[in-house]
Amino acid sequence: MRMSEPVIEVEDLHVHAGASHILRGIGLTVRPGEAVALLGANGSGKSTLVKTLIGVITPSGGTVRLLGASLADDHVPWERVGYVPQRVGAGTGVPSTAAEVVASGLLSGRRWWLPRGWRTRVREALEEVGLADRAESAMHVLSGGQQQRVLIARALVRDPDLLVLDEPVAGVDRPSQEAFAASVRRLVERGVTVLVVLHELGELAGIVTRAVVLRHGRVVHDGAPPHPRADHDAAGHRHVHPHDDSRPTPALTQNPVTGSPEEVAP
Ligand SMILES: Nc1ncnc2c1ncn2[C@@H]1O[C@H](COP(=O)(O)OP(=O)(O)O)[C@@H](O)[C@H]1O
Ligand SMILES: [Mg+2]
Image 1 (cartoon, rainbow, N blue to C red):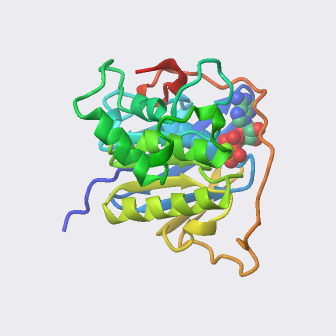
Image 2 (tube, rainbow, N blue to C red):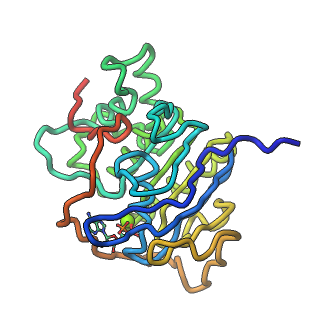
């Protein structure tokens, strides 16, 4: 029997930023319907890997194929990919409502108008993350966890086949963590392929089917998810860890998936 075509196929991927060798020969194959957690210590290269996957960072070596298309050839069907970046881009001027931010997820590089039925799709995506009642709320009045859920809805409104999320629950409130876990469970049941960067498995322990652990830019584990520690994940347990955003990002290229939500106010 022929195995179904991988959704993500990474071979010998290298990323340099200046003198530092950040990703050192990553290989990763993710098949349709898998729910993969990408784990590893702070600075191990998780964000660099997902940004390279979605085309924001240009690799210095190796190949990436997404949904059967090579990233280098620029034929990736981006409308089938949903991406939730690591941090909420806070405080950039124009106040957008939750519904506007979600609607911006329906735009693509080739289409600058909203498709028919967008209101329904936006409402459904907000329902999916448990925020239907906050559609008209300005983003800045929402909690950090709720803002994060809006960004997840923005990725979901595209009805993606592949959803990539970078630490979607880091530092968010408990209800948002639970809402997120429930969403991922439904998506996986629906056959969506999920790659999620996590600091710890937490709520997703029973949902992800596989864990890939990075250390110093290399894959050091690829297989069964680690068992959650019994004392972990008690109510109130939070991981807060700093991220150094002061560094410049290596070689940026335009990508329709990553357009900032503030750019659009439908
Ligand atoms: N633009 C950059 N220039 C130089 N070093 C960088 C840059 N971005 C990230 N790094 C370094 O690359 C490593 C991996 O970072 P990152 O992918 O953000 O890790 P993680 O998401 O696992 O915390 C870290 O050592 C980080 O300091
Ligand atoms: Mg990161």
